[in-house]
Amino acid sequence: MSKTAGIIVIGNEILSGKTRDENSLYLVRELRDLGVDVRKVSVIPDELNLISNEVREFSCSYDYVFTTGGVGPTHDDLTMDGVASAFNRRIRRHPDLEATLRQYYDQDIIDANLRMADIPEGARLVGAKGLWFPVIAVENVHIFPGVPEILRRKFERIKEMFREAPFHLREVYLRADEGRITGILHRVLADFPDLLLGSYPDFDNPAYSIKLTLESKDLAYLERAQALLLEELARIQLRPLNAV
Amino acid sequence: MSKTAGIIVIGNEILSGKTRDENSLYLVRELRDLGVDVRKVSVIPDELNLISNEVREFSCSYDYVFTTGGVGPTHDDLTMDGVASAFNRRIRRHPDLEATLRQYYDQDIIDANLRMADIPEGARLVGAKGLWFPVIAVENVHIFPGVPEILRRKFERIKEMFREAPFHLREVYLRADEGRITGILHRVLADFPDLLLGSYPDFDNPAYSIKLTLESKDLAYLERAQALLLEELARIQLRPLNAV
Image (cartoon, rainbow over all chains, first blue to last red; front, side, top):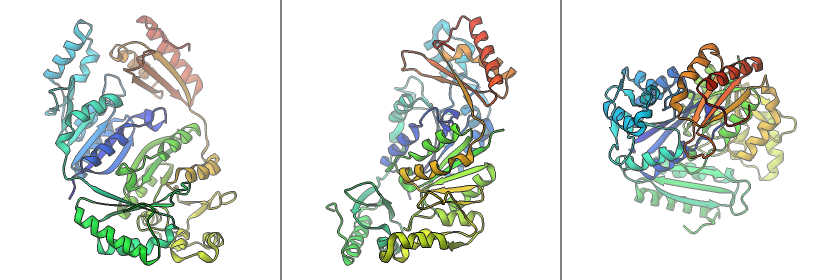
């Protein structure tokens, strides 16, 4: 079984369409490459109770949880409080983070800046070496900022800790009505119930009209499933458009 | 109070990073323009129980629910079953939809194609005039396909039924450290608790470093809140970079 992950995107600016969420697509792709199975993405507002409930639910449901957004000094930055509340922890000023902030702001520092050192009690600082400001983690929840460049830099720094066996992917392109192949897909799944099998019509592409995706972490299993699929397609005179 | 909405994006291809979800951004922006407050977006796999649970929860939580994806003839198209199950309804073949499909496919029709006429019992056909295939709705849940062009054409056709009073937006751009203005933002919210106030740092933009967004459906309220904000900013010698 793959490790699973859930991503919580926090921010009114996404839900009101002011900002396009680039972070979940980035994380989804990175995690897939790492062999992690993302099971859910949710986008929620900057509201304490909603953040707390979502974090609690995700933390119980998935091996890893990633939050993006809602960290910073202003009134709408509630992720730390939300995560603390999800785990019934208090917020505490972390001495290492405080030192980092004091060094950065020097004598210009004001109280509001130090709020970024206020994190859930017992939180871990992940990737502290090599990052100006580490990733904050509580239980299985990893807290990332909403600014895409910073999120990427941070994820890049710590991602190897999530790596496991890769997914193998095969794609089969066809020109046919999707209805014609439903029986075949069912037969393949009957023999290969663990195959991840997707069927995606494309109505505007002159090159093909269906893309099938076959995935598994078990390469031999994948290849046997693919062989059966091609055999069944040949039986109704359907040849893949790509060489497989 | 605004009407609220939730969007459920259904599809393994999104969660595995194969396809970028364009639909939620489109719907979020359209709904915002219509004056509807989107409260949550979730992306979930093509799995019957997960779809059913999410639809049930969203249907209770928001005035309108929109699903995208998972409609079609293949094994991974489970949205209709999921919605039916959420409301304890059976799936029934709808005679009008069956007629539409028979006309389209003519003598080439096969059973799998007719699956697209199988919808939850008692479902409404919305926007049937002017659409080749109408939007299927059950209770407050509106079911859209995942193909962006088709989703847009369908939403465009029915969107006026969701229109209400618009949100008014003001933006204030500043060059300052976000920490410096947190007290001011709190004071504005203390006087205008219903103001939707966002503060967004931009670390890479040479033109400004903070964008503040102020929103309300009540224009007079918004203007009073904005006046207070500008007054408070002037007090610490912070002038907006844009003319407001």
